[in-house]
Structures are given as C-alpha cells and as structure tokens.
Image (cartoon, rainbow, N blue to C red; front, side):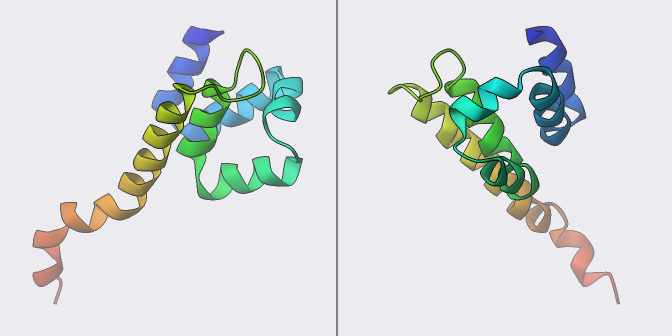
Length: 96
C-alpha cells in the first residue's frame, strides 16, 4: 500500500487522497472530523491534507513531530499556488 500511494503522489496529491479514501475510509473518519473538511482539503489544500493524513495515520491524532510534516504540506501548497508566477516571469513581458 505504501508503494502504491507513493506512485500516486507522482500523479498528484488529489489522486492519492481519493485512492486512500476509497481503500481506508475509516482513517478519514478518525483523522478528519467531517467529510466536508476532507472534501475542502481535497479541493483547496491537497498537499496539506495528505500530510495531515500521513502524520495522523497510526493513531488518528497528530503527534509533536507530525506537525513538521503538516507544515511541509502547507509549504508545498504555497509553492504550488504561488510558484508559477516566478517561473513565468520572463514570458510575461513578451506576451504582448
């Protein structure tokens, strides 16, 4: 299962979350309080949601070191949303 989820990460975090949700729905109920929270996480912050699920996997709650994993998920989401502008900075002037 771990290798399968790792392969899905290369496809995208949303695919990994959906497959994990289908294979292990009781972990979602333990980690996230409502299905609405899981759906919003899937749509808006997929890396953070996936990091939270990984950090809370054995017990359903996030231990001390797990918050570092969640913080890395937040950074991955921020880089996903705001990294494109820096990468395309040379194309913007030539767009005219």
